[in-house]
Amino acid sequence: MIGDLSLFGVFVPKLLVLLLASYGMLLVLKKVLARLGVYRLVWHPALFDLSIFVILAATAANVAEWYLS
Amino acid sequence: MIARFSRLLKTALTLTLFAIALAVGWNSWQSYMQTPWTRDGHVRADVVSIAPDVPGPVAAVLVSDNQTVEKGDVLVRIDPERFQIALDLSDATLKDKTAALRQARRDAERYHRLKNGPAISEQNVEQADLAVEQASAAYDEAKANRDLAALNLTRTEVRAPVNGVVSNLSLNPGDYVSSGSGVLALIDTDTLRVEGYFEENQLPSIAVGDAVSVDLMGHPQELRGHVESIAAGIEDRERTNGSNLLADVTPTFSWVRLAQRVPVRIALDEVPADTRLVAGMTATVSVHPRRDGGAPAEASAAESATMRPASAEPAR
Image 1 (spheres, rainbow over the protein chains, first blue to last red):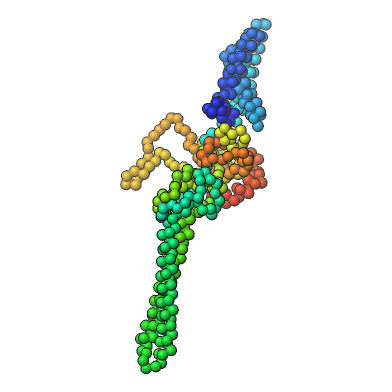
Image 2: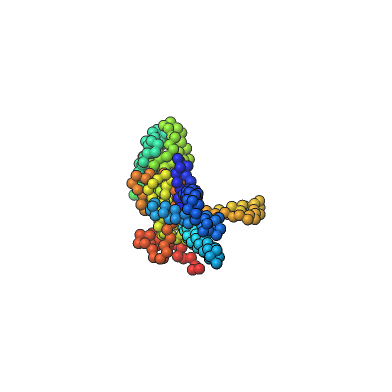
């Protein structure tokens, strides 16, 4: 989570990359969950999506930390 | 009944997930915000500005650009001819004064021997003694002048005062150098270090001796070090000295305020062999605060060495 990532010589914060990746995963996951009909079991879909995004991002951060160290 | 139950279940499911997200998100946020780290770090080294002690045309430049030199190596040779002549001149003067001193001593001895006879007055004897003292002083002066000329001659060889690397060399034989003005920069490689510019709100979690990892931009390997010292002051940007020496404080009131940066000096302990440290490189610096309060062995030694003056501070 801490540090920079080199994208063809442009150094961007790892956090930005992480959040973008999490958002991408969220989009895919939403499609899958919608297909499975999970959203019928959900109270507020937007709140549900936000929660999923936060959990994805935090997990990705921890995985990245563990993988890089 | 079933509809109501299922609505309850839906609410519970969503809220549970939200609670998990809150906990996990808060945890990550804390570790992101509370770890003292900065992307604003730089490799630094002391730069010695080499200035010749004597003026003259450059006879030879004995180093090339970016060359590693050791303490005491000759870097530049200034044309020594003028200083050699000055030395010869002062040598000749010294010889003259030596001869004069010898003659004065012989005269004095003679006067002392004859002073009981009728031909020599007491005044003659005193004058002879005076002549010896004057000749002796003139001799000392000539000797000092000779030493100075010899020193000037040795100073025509400009030597490296520290181990380092010559940088940005643009001095050529034939250039005229004047005494006291820098002609080449020597980067003192013994003082290579990393300085991290930490936000002032991160300072409470940084202590001298804490382990530090440093990521140089574009280098895969991590450097390890420890916090050597923390700057004791930075410039107050809101304040200048006005006319008639009164404080001129800028009247600002900003809603959004940025934390100022305080330099923290990091001594490097482990540098991978293939890493070339260049003063000015960008680095990401993370401090790993000791939570247990117990200092690692080597860090505590460094701390006790550098923190001694600070222990005189009044306890808070």
